[in-house]
Amino acid sequence: MIAKIAMASGFALILIGLYGALTHRNMLRMIVSFTIASTGVNVALVAVGWMLGRTAPILDAAVPVTEALQRVIDPVPQALVLTAIVIGLGVTALMLAYAYRLHATKGGLDITDHTELKW
Amino acid sequence: MSSLMLAIAAFTVLAMLAAALIATFSKSLSASILAAGLVSLLASVLFLVLAAPDVAMTEAAIGSGLTTFLFFFVLARVRGGDND
Image (cartoon, rainbow over all chains, first blue to last red; front, side):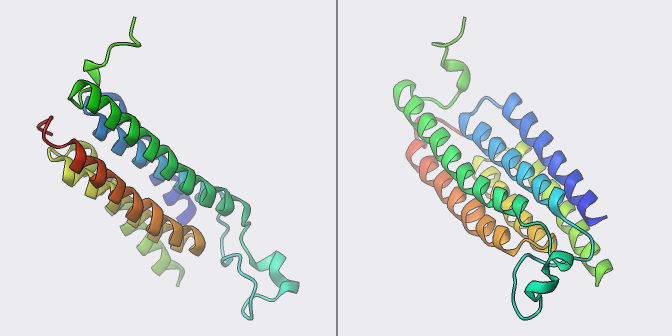
């Protein structure tokens, strides 16, 4: 049940972020929407790996190595999301750098002012 | 215990969707950036409920803290030429 709620919220966040990125003209607002969509993808991925009645994949006194296979959640989706969060920061920084350069050349944040790649 | 986790997850999800809608439809760009940071922070709480504490730590530090800082860093340099 928790996994279903988290999965639904993840996809709702993806849709909200996509809507914002498609409808806004301010470049910074578009990047904010991309950040929200990225968070939604991460939530959906972690929800895929969740299993009922199991604990975090940390081997210590509470979870011995011999019983780990029965009591621990699959750590692979979590590792993927851990990488995706850091890559998301890099992508956001790159988009912000592009927005800053476009602002410096044209003096505005409106994406419709930049028509060089339109046809 | 399980019903408590379910209640925490439901409350977090509702707050997260409300913050995402605020981030999308708010008039002020600063409020929009802060609401996006709040979405990341609540997502880290959800990761903790989903038994992923390492992902929760990273999301709170990088997704919520560093990304918000980056947005305000660029916003301070961009202000002046544009109204919003």
